[in-house]
Structures are given as structure tokens and as C-alpha cells.
Amino acid sequence: MTEYKQCNPSLSIRRLCKTFGHVRSSFYAGIKAKRRNDRLDKVVWDQILKIWDTFPGIGYRKLSPKLNCSGKKILRIIRKFRKGPSRMILPKEKPKRRILNVIKLITNDLKKYGDKCKRGNWILREGKNKYRHIIDPTRPYQLWAGDWKELKIPLLGVTLYIFTIIDCYTRQLMGWELSLIKDPASAIKAADMAISKAKKDPIYILRKLIMHTDQGGAYISDEYIEYWRSHGVILSTSDRGKPTQNPYAEAFFSILSRFWLKYKEILTVTDAKNVVSEFFSIYNSQWSHSGIDHMTPDQKLKQFHLSLKSKNNGPILAS
Image 1 (cartoon, rainbow, N blue to C red):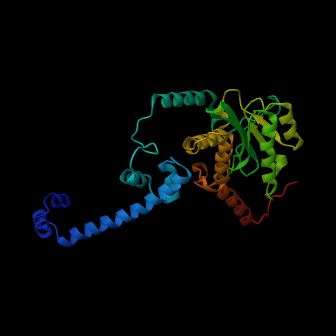
Image 2 (image 1 turned 90 degrees about the vertical axis):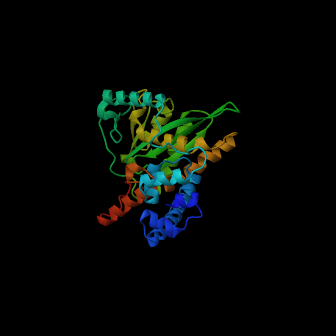
Image 3 (image 1 turned 180 degrees about the vertical axis):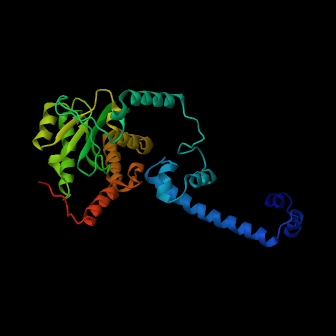
């Protein structure tokens, strides 16, 4: 009826309501409700833009728990207010063939290796494949995952290397290092940061920690192995060429690439250091994970502390 009024301004509201069999009060109530809904949608849209300012391109599945709205509502609001190209992939868009091929490869890998590739199940190896067993982390500082990623600066023809260590229970970033060379010393610097951070928490048990990595040159070097053994840490490695066996570390770098580096301009080494350090400074406190009930890593660690207090067992102190 509103469309008829716009096309025929001379028609009165009274006549239109009589023609369509509506009560005028209902017509005005509908207009009032639409305006109220538009205001509420605008509030949600402003919140979405605020989140996008920090993490550009974040999808509706991540936005839903943050804004306490359904995914359908968020998609409707985005379609309503968004101008220009989409900053996120909408469900109706068909995946490209390249993505389908990647999914096919992962599916075949899972069929071949079974439970070994599931997130939370790990193939642990002491030294050079002396023994194996499977573990599912049940507390912080029980299982850490390490990995590295290339960060290229095309204008300079320079490649940087990002080394990180993730706590698999809380998803916390424990330590990191940005280096011009991929060597054991850089990996050890990330490890030093991780251990220093862990020691600040009264519940850490470093001697019962398992450190899981792939079989990259820096991680199977004598320096790196001796460093962790000097701290009484158990070493674990994935099979060669099987990134699905190190899913937490791979997922972290996926977040870094898709929701941060993709939207940043990096022209110099200084730019790279600033961009990476900025993300790492907010990741633990602001990035929520569906695998830990949409909590941030800091919230997950705090929840574990509270659960210990509720059991009246006191903190687990390092020995």
C-alpha cells in the first residue's frame, strides 16, 4: 500500500485503507514499526562496521555470537546497508573450482589417515619416531603447537618468516618471532617468549608439556630439540607433508592471512613488523573461536582458572 501512495501522491491514506480493507491505525502502526526496526538494524550495522574495522572481512558466523543475533538477521542487515562489493562470502555464492579441489584433497587425506587428522587428536613422537600415542588437551600448558609462515614483500623482493606457538586448549598465542631467516635461533626466540608468558601463570606445568610441530628444518635441528629437552618438554612431530596433523597452528595462520594481512599494505620490513605485532597484540583478547564456545583465548583461560577455584583444589603449581 505504501508503494501505491508513492506512485499516486494524490490518493489519501483514508481512501487507500478503505480500498485495501485496512484500518488506518494499523497502517500507521506498520510504518512506525518499520522505522523502529530500521533504527535497530542501523545499530547492529554500526556494530558490524566497528568489528570490521578491527578484523576486516569477518563472516556472519563469527559476527553472530559477538552481536547475539542470528546469522540470517546479520545477512539481511548486511544486504540492506552494504554498498559496493561484499567484504565477506555470502552463503548463496558458489565456491570456485579451486576451493572444491582443496576440499577434495582434504577429504581424501582424512579417509586415508582417519583419526590421526582430526583436530584434538595428535600423533606424538619422541625424537625420531621412537613411539606414538594420541592425546586430547584437557588443560592449558599441556599441548603447544608451533609452525612458521612466509611473509613476502614483493616490492623489496624480501621474504620474512613468522614463527608462532599456540596453546591448543585455550588457542592462546604464547610466543612469536618475525625473522629474515628461517633458522633454529628464530624458533627458539618464539619458544623463549612462550615459556616466559607461561611462567607468569601459577597453573603452568612446563615439565608435563608436549610441543608439537611439523618436520621443518628449524624444528628438527639439534639446537631446537636440545632447547626443549633442557626444559623437560616432550617433543612431537607431524608426518612430512601432512599439515592436517597440525591443525591449530594452520588455523591460526589462516586467520592471520584471511582476516588481517589480506587487508594491510606492507611495503617495507618496518610495515611488516608493525602489522604483525598489531594483530598479535589483540588476538588473545579479541578473536573468538567457535571451537571454544565462541570465547576468546583469554576468556577460555580465565574460565579454566574459575573452574579450578570452584573445585576448591587450588592452583596447580609448577614443580
